[in-house]
Amino acid sequence: MKKVISENIRTKLKAILVPLVEKEQYIFYSQKMIKLTNLKSLIDLGLIAKIKAGVYLIKNPNEDNKLAIQKNLPVIIKFLGEEYKNWCLGGSTALEYYLYGQTFQKKIRILIKDKINKNLKIGNYIFEFRGNKNLTKEIINILPINKTPLKLLSPEHLTINLLHRLSPNELPKIKEIIPSLFRDYHFDSEKLNQYALKEKKIKALKTFESLLSKTSRKLSANPIWIIQYNKEYKKYVSDIKKVKTNHLKPNNNLQILIDNAIENKKYDAYHSTTVEGYNITPEEVSKLLDGKLDIPKEKRLADFLAIKGYAMAFDFLIKKIKNDFGHPKINEKLIKDIQTHLWTPNVNYGILEKKNLGLYRHEPVYIRNSFYVPPNWIKVPDLMDSYIKSMCQIKNKIYYSVISHGDLVKIHPFIDGNGRTARFLMNYILLCSGYKWVTIRNDHRDKYFKTLEQVQTKGEIIPFAKFIINLIERNK
Image 1 (cartoon, rainbow, N blue to C red):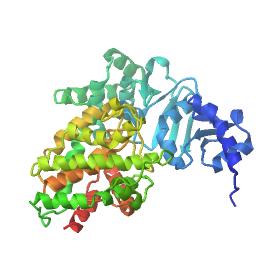
Image 2 (cartoon, rainbow, N blue to C red):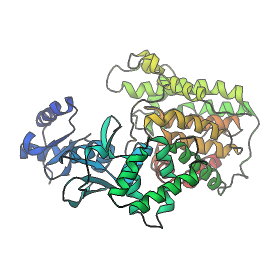
Image 3 (cartoon, one colour):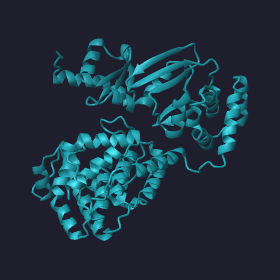
Image 4 (cartoon, rainbow, N blue to C red):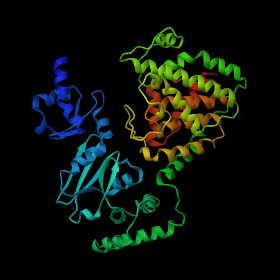
């Protein structure tokens, strides 16, 4: 039976971690910091997660341990690497950090200048520690990932090692990636040759030179993440055609569509906010929007401000739909205007600064209860530019609404409110195209987030498309 911990003891236990958090030291050695009895209680409270014997990660008490490990992966890598004198990331792990600012691998390869060959399972990851006698500071490159400086094998050495190690069957997978690495990072040709000769990897060097000569002329000026985004977009457009929409006929009576949306405003306000985790009742939503309920100045302030922000964004969008009926078009201004209206009540209450409204994020974000990690914030402007250009090419308006919704949540361009912004965009396209407003109810949240995660992690649009199109059908 789990031991019950009093509130007084809880407070004292949390206080143990405060000095570490203040120093931004989220990983610690337990023997040096905390007594064994306190350690067990901190684990029971969900305040720490075990990384390995004697090493723990400070986390949110409501957060799954494996998810906390994923979110803090760069910090964990750095901590484990620095237990050795010389270390760096190698293999596919280093390649993905260079190109994407994150890794999608479940195996994390760490090279150590030591006689070592061991694996360590942490959460969903296998950390592969491999000895490399030639590992020196000269062949290590430092790259900041989410504000954490990670050591990576230099591009030249990484390229030769990958081409030397990969089998002929695996080689085609990186034929486009290696030249992109060459384009995005400075390569020292002399260093490349010297390393290949020293390591007796001349064949790998020739493969690399051949690869460059064949592809450099065709190499896109776009960074690798835009090349990848464009591939995914084309796949969405191709795959979604398998979901039929011919039976869904638009209604050209704008007033009927607007009246229906306004009639369901309170209903949608409740569901669109509670599906994101806000805590408010339908009755409170109704009274708040009717002006019969004051916003409390207490811990539920965020819940009530979310409803006020929703109402402002909704009213703005209705006016926009009236102007754009028959020809919906997503652009950056529309997306940022929705965000601005969503968060204006927080500005009015002094929680946010007005100058920060509608800005793309400048820091990493994580999605609650999801193993998907959105792109590095540095990539967001490029991705949003490609997103807007791509969405406007989709002729079928139902497909347009579905893909724009799923893809915006995948990019996650803002610190918060991405889901609400995506649902507003979807409904803007639907109403402008003659279809009724679609509400994703709170009791649909599991299926909604599950199908969204399939878009995010697997690039599969069909389950999400079927989910949304089923809701459109019910609106007929």
